[in-house]
Length: 107
Image 1 (cartoon, rainbow, N blue to C red):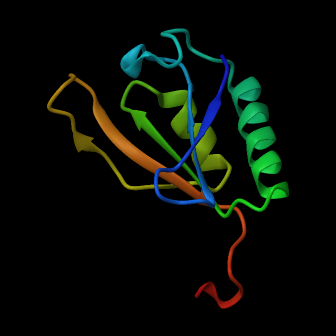
Image 2: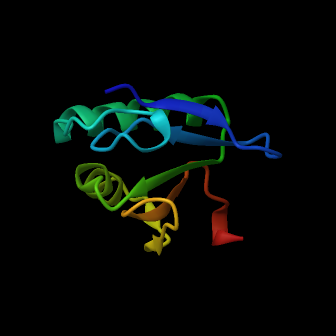
Image 3: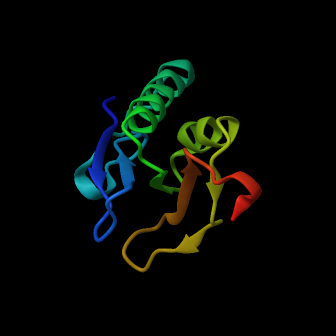
């Protein structure tokens, strides 16, 4: 498992994470089920790295097969959009995000 990150198009302070495994969709990751603690440590490393460089938000998309990743993100305080149906696969898709540098007062 190797979580990768890319810039969010048209946004200089958000990153997209991918490669959470449990699926072959989109050619990133593998169908191997990751160890929960290993995945959690990897996500925490990415959060700390991007926070230290001043990034504000991390975003990820997961499908309904990626149950370990969804549990890890939830435990780490990420928020989910809930699932939408994919017209291209049998799985459902959700968008997850975490604000790394919240604005005081929530504004």
